[in-house]
Amino acid sequence: INRILPFSGTILVMIWCVMWSFSGSEVLPGGSLFGLLAIFYCAVLGGKLLEVIKIPSVPQLPPLLGMLLAGFTLRNIPFLSQYIYISSTWSSSLRNTALTIILVRAGLGLDPEALKHLKTVCLRLSMGPCLIEACSAAVFSHFIMKFPWKWAFLLGFVIGAVSPAIVVPSMLLLQERGYGIEKGIPTLLIAASSLDDILAITGFNACMGIVFSSGNILHTLLVSLLEVSIGVVLGVILGYFLRYFPSRDQTKLPWKRAFLVLVMCISAVLGSQRIGLHGTGGLCTLVLTFVSGIYWSREKIRVQKIVAATWNIFQPLLFGLVGSEVSVSSLSSNAIGICVATLSLALLVRIFVTFLLMCFAGFSFKEKIFIALAWMPKATVQ
Image (tube, rainbow, N blue to C red; front, side, top):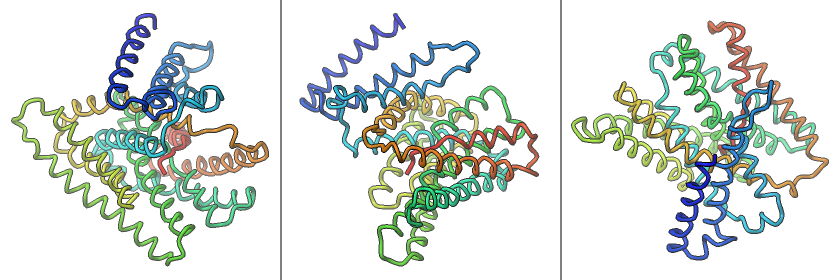
């Protein structure tokens, strides 16, 4: 830390000076760029502190917890929060960019052979727990929190999404170390978590259309299916395009491929949201990277390393921004208990259903427990 902090501090000051030269007041306290820099560096520092802190007989705490706490602290300390501001548009775009990078890593990390062997199990794992938890959360929130049924199902699809930002990097790390690759567990969880999120986003947008629209419910559902179809077709087309462009005889090929993949996928995710096709971009990203990665074969490892380096930048941004979204002042003490009860009951149903769906899939008891517990992290992908 003694060696890192002075260098990082110097870099921070120089970045601030350059940004001030370009944007002026935006990097002064109260501006969006100032808030972004503050959250980013505090999140990085929070993650580093948790890496250093070691509590006896307690497993190593993940750095992302420190990043979340850093964002949460900046938002809820009064004399700090008045100077830390990031526009909702910036925050949403940056979080969606971070989600895109995770989906790119997920698509490139898929093992085609393992996925072919586990395709039916993958569909069960991606659809079953998400739909069951969404429905159970809707029931619990209707009877415990007194939500109307439409709003209850909207909440259900918010809760039903698993966090790819936690699951995907963890599974890629286990895959690199050789754990679970014989039965394809990392590939199964990577693919299923990505599809789970796409299903949750599609369900959420369908419920949004039902809640806020007086139109035909069937039309809303058909639009959601159309978004999925467009995402698959566009992903296949762009994936085949990246198989042959840039050509193999070019220099610095992995860097060019990584750049094109990231630019195309970020454009797909942010662009699809801009035109109202919210479920298209994520599925396009997953299909695009999977299709192109099959052709790249062993060469895709270098592309994966470049994409992983970009995640090191966006991880503190993502978790810092998520932490800064939690405002203690907006929470009611009476609502906290029933919210925790609703979330806990829905989560227990999800764990139990996930375990049952993994029966007769060739996994041992411990592996089924691992898969069920790996499905606990919650996402903010909607």
